[in-house]
Image 1: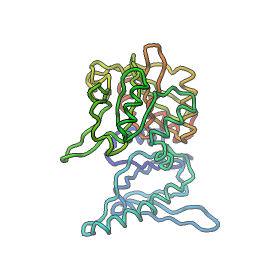
Image 2: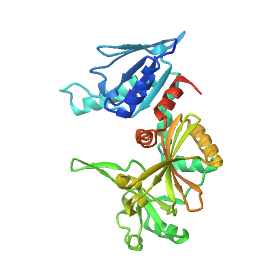
Image 3: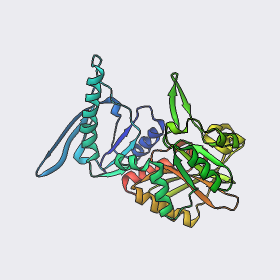
Image 4: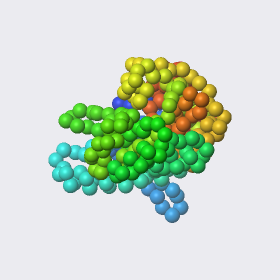
Length: 321
């Protein structure tokens, strides 16, 4: 009898719906939860003693799951804790810290299969960590500078043949004036390098611009790889394809042996079972690693190409190779 799979994700995350549908279609018991439901719609009872590891249950008004029976966890961007009305802001901050340490601590201690474990996701989300690991694993990476110094940018520009791009070191999304905004990758002009005012306010990431034939989104699930060429149909999309989705076309492709071997080493080094990696492919066919997102979107790849990524995630959760 298959063990239950615990799914931790936002309630409105529809790619997760596909994974849940795939698992339930296989007869697997699924307990889905969102941390936004704790503590008002989700309860925790966790116990440990000298003779036994963590046991107990998670429960909603309609379902429960025995923590000692959980065979795998699918973790994907759940929501923030929601507390009862009437609490002060300091009380909410205190309660949130207790919830992270309590609920999060018990869940993260589960010694089962994870896709992906939040501890390793947190480390892997640092681009400097990714780039160093990718280089060590034999993948090509663009020359990169992270700085808040104007003179360092100009020295880097003088040393690197060709243009530079600038992009966020962390999430490119921010909320300003109650609107969600995205900071896209941008190729720098000579005028940009002349006027670098404001760079001292925080860290910025600069990279050598890699002349591209196209880009590739490489979705890795366990040892399986789903590679999709992304062809830009506009100048904006050639700088950052996320800026003009309407101009993009997609096609499946094969992964060069050396890239596949390097990615498997990288995933192992970062302790990731899932990752969405982005590559630039230059006119000579060389693949340049840009980043790997341990919680990257995959449903659009499946929708555009028919590649069975949801099934592969379900396989990984079940331990099917």
